[in-house]
Structures are given as structure tokens and as C-alpha cells.
Amino acid sequence: MLSKLWKRQAPQMVGIDIGSHEIKAILLSKTADGYKIQNYLTAPVRKGAVVDHEIRDAEAVQESLEQIRRGLPKSAKFAAVAVSGSAVMTKVIYMDASLNEEEMEAQIEIEADNLIPYSLDEVSIDFETLNQNASDPTKVDVLLSACRTENIDSRIDVLDMVELDTKVVDVEAYALGRSAELIYAQLPDGAKESSIAMVDVGANMTTFAVVENGETSFIREQAFGGELYTQSILSFYGMTYDEAESAKLAGELPRNYMFEVLSPFQTQLLQQIKRTIQIYCTSSGKEKVDYIVLSGGTATLEGMAGLITSELGVHTIVADPFQGCLHAEDSVKNDVQPHIGKYMVACGLALRSYAQWRT
Image (cartoon, rainbow, N blue to C red):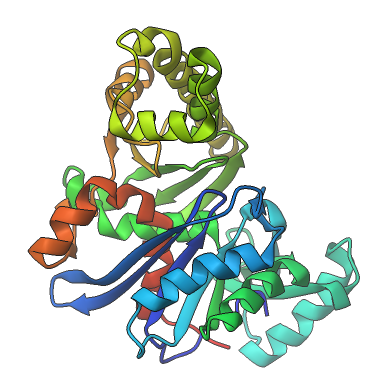
């Protein structure tokens, strides 16, 4: 199945976000008032090892995961990981509401053979019952998802190499949408009943997930990320890649970089967000989203949230789940809080430990 997805009693899983620049991992425990960080880790990934969300160099990814594994407790045996939304085909189909799960699964295989442009031997399939069909109450809407098995197996295989048993393979944008649970308290009252655009700006990809009434209703990816910002720095100031990365992180760029590099990049990012929200509004019939939440390593760029708020007229924040329902020991919180936004996808994956699921 696409995710070996659901079981009634979910084990505690490490959420592992395999990116093109680094791997992020987080382990959460459930508390009376939210969730607590037990472990969080990052490990750099060799350049070119992960391209467009595809693992091109399994050995390099394994080396990074071994660093992650060494930092996890020995009791951590299970993992949740994600594939790119662009690698997954989804379609809402309508099925008889009277079918039980086994009957539905048999019918899904028949439907999938007609809907998927690959041999069923090459794909992994999963489905989720959504709501009663609006036009026919005897039917239910069912979300059918399919992904090339090789995309799933590449992730399962590298995690196997470091003795982590993959229990869930999710879709990155849905994991991002699930992480909204951690930041509702950071937004005004009633936000959970509103539309929230979660925007995760990674190194090479920006992932969008619109969450409405606690459910992810729209996802999209754009090939745009912080790598372009780094490339602008190194070309503008004659730096090497490592020098540009170091200067960017340390805030040691020339005084006029804001006009020469930062402002043009922010304008590009703003246009990416604006265009995607327009696509969402067109498809949903909505006029706008109520809130925008920025995350990812590039989200903390100086003035980005304020720029989006003023230009789009939408209340925009940088994700800080510590202002929501995420907790940690003081030493952990002090260390990770400045960077917590880049763990949002990993958090969304780790939250699968506390949701119903089935095989």
C-alpha cells in the first residue's frame, strides 16, 4: 500500500523529512496539553544525493541517516517518511456507501486499473474514505492515491539500512497540512475553522497545503526555494557555495545585500505564493485564504511575513509551534526554537504516531 498507512494502534514513529539539503528528524510524545519533543536531529546531505525529491545516491543518504540514527534512542525502531506530492497521483472517486473496507479495497483495484497510466505491478495504491457524496447520499467520496513503487521503496530501503522500520510513507504536503495542529494557538481564536495556507520554503521546493476545518483540502509544489537565494549571493559577491551558505546563516553579507539580493528574492517568493493562492481560490471558489503560515529554512528571511501581509492583505506568520501546543525541556527549546520552522514536515510525520491508521 502507498503508506502501509493505517493501523488501529499506531506505534511511536520518528518523523523523517529527507530533503535535498539536509535530513530533519523529530520524535514526539503526547502530553495532556499537546506534544513534547523527545529528540530532534539534522544531518547534511551530500549535494546531488537528493534531486527533485528523488534519492539519486542511496549511499550518501544512508550516511546522513546513520548520523540521525546515532542520535536517536535505541528504543526508536519505527519511522514515518514522505514522498513528494508530484510523485503521487490522486483522484476522488465515488463508491457505494454500503461497502465494507475489504469490499471497497477489491473495488478500488478494479477502478485503479482504469485510472492509473502504469501497470498496477509498478504502483502502490492507497485510499481514504472522505465524506458522503453531495449529489448522491448512497455514495461516498473516496480519495484514491497511487505512487510508483520505486519512489516508496527507495525511502524504505535507506531507512532499513539504518535499522528503522518504515511504518508510514505519507505525502509531504499532507504531512505539512497535519502540522497545522501544532500552531492553531499561535493564530487568532477560531483559526481552526478558517482556511490556513501552510507554505514550507525548502532548499529547492516550496510546498503548499491549505487546511480548512482541520483537513488538508489543497496541495501544490513549486520548484522554487532558498537555493536560488544562495546562488544569487555567490554570483553577486563572487563567493563559493560554502562561503555563501555560511555568510547567509551568520548574517555576514555586505550592507547593501538587502537591495541587491534579498529584496529581489523576496519578490519572487511573494509571486510564487500569490500565484498558488490564486490557483487555490479558482479551484475552491473562495476569495482568499484567511491566514498564511511560513515554515522551512527560508521562512525566517528578514521581513518576509510582513511583506506578504502588506502585499496580499492576509495575516501571515512564521510558524513557531512552541507558541502553540509543542513543548520541550528548556535546554532543548532554547536550542531548537530559532530553527523549529524547518521541522514542520517532520512534525507532521511524527504526528502520525497519534492518529488512527490501518494496514
